[in-house]
Length: 167
Image 1 (cartoon, helix red, strand yellow):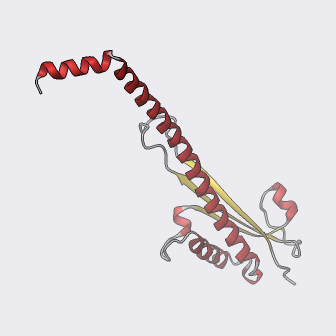
Image 2 (tube, rainbow, N blue to C red):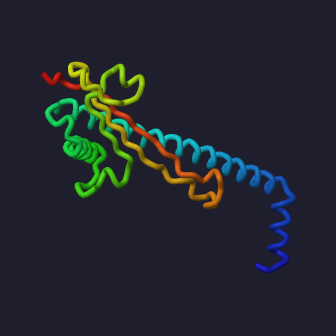
Image 3 (tube, helix red, strand yellow):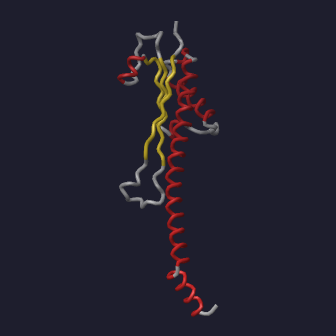
């Protein structure tokens, strides 16, 4: 193709109705792609939050069925981490405490859940177990690193289960 032929085609594309239709179609597709990207981000975030919430609940449930280890922080965290790894299908070498903020509270009464998660030694028949997993979601990769909108978002999943009586 010669240069005048290329210039002629570009000119006809930009000036004629076909060119305007193509540009409008291109802009419409870009808007749809941006909308789809937003929906995909929302769905991905909701899926991750639900996955972590189910893992936290599963760990709390397993701890609630094991009141004999309550008070031994090392055993509580080990059992909760093992259950979470199984629920999230993570490798056996994965370390829960180094990747996430990971808290286990046993012996929590329902009244204390309203005020926080401090254990109550007097309430043994209504004790509950709370497992919290805190994780950070990565910032947007397409924003500049020094942008104020490009911050790491912290999330928390909480699982609560009623414990078995200790007596």
